Image 1 (cartoon, helix red, strand yellow):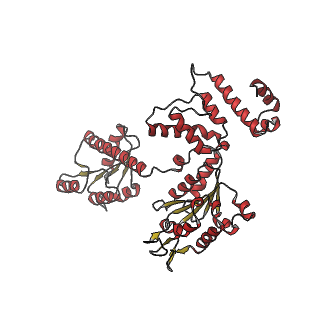
Image 2 (cartoon, helix red, strand yellow; image 1 turned 30 degrees about the vertical axis):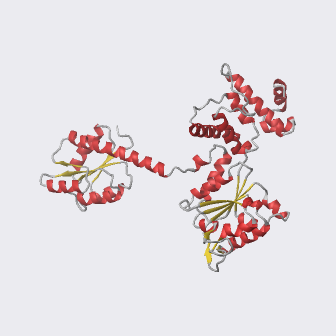
Image 3 (tube, one colour; image 1 turned 90 degrees about the horizontal axis):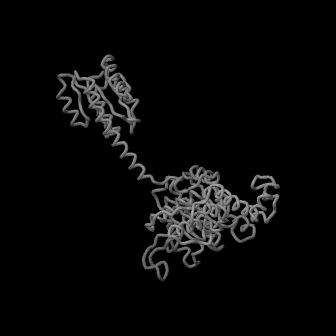
Length: 439
């Protein structure tokens, strides 16, 4: 009747306690009993999933004091008080103090269960509302942001959870469209800095003339066009997270200035001599091998090591194909809701095409295909809507197998031996399937 909820009875008279517990047990309601308020308080924490039925007259802390302490712990917890014949005045005061109801001795088991059931229903609804509010207040989870069941994505989520509350600089490496900024945002949102700003800065769009003003800010009249004081990105991100996207495109002269700030953990606005202390998480993102660039003299090695305290490698979509159906469905549902369209059905052979595609644009490309699919716009990847009957299971399996084999052969430049090793099938079996599918 009230799954997950229970009744805690506080009664120092063993016979009365036993009778009350038996009344609830006969109705199939979970019940526990203790002999004092002190024992009750040891069992009840905030969010206790149930109600309390307590005698007012107890040794040590009495029922009125217990009511007060329970209300301080959780003011939505229903408390029913049991009163003696001469305790009506106390019962009225208890109602004023927030008790759910009171029972005057002697009372029947039916009366006890009836009052308790109404209190349990109120508690059930209250906890449901509280749970919903908590969900709405904390929509963010790594699982809903970084979608995928592949081992690679599980590793990324685990690393983010482990790193989130550290102050370590993080370097995110991944191909275009693999979700580097999303990972940086997840680092921020999973940390204690989540209430402070997340600032993303594209290093490729900063000219030398704007660099210092954009990052450090300036005082009024620091230069000709500086008519009023401006807060720079460093200062705005203080307490939060600052992402340097496309860090590889930052000119060497700007790298030197950035390095000094990271070393000193302070900076000065243009036109000021007063240092501003820097307290923000630094995250850098790149699609290039910064180590190779630093070895070639194209990126400062000291800045590389300063940024690369921890490295997060994002796998390209083609290396986690098992996540493609889930991601595509997620993007498709989002697009249909945004465009107010009915959700179209993805046929098995179309899903096979998605799984077999190389996805050079990674997740960004997949989102684009899903949005176009939601609008009924066909792409070279999904060239035309199916007509006629839905294909059989055998045909769908063959379509899927054909795509996977073709993709393996493409990756290994037509080499049957290497392709068979990657597919984990004998070379002779692969050869037969290549002939069967005309590959």
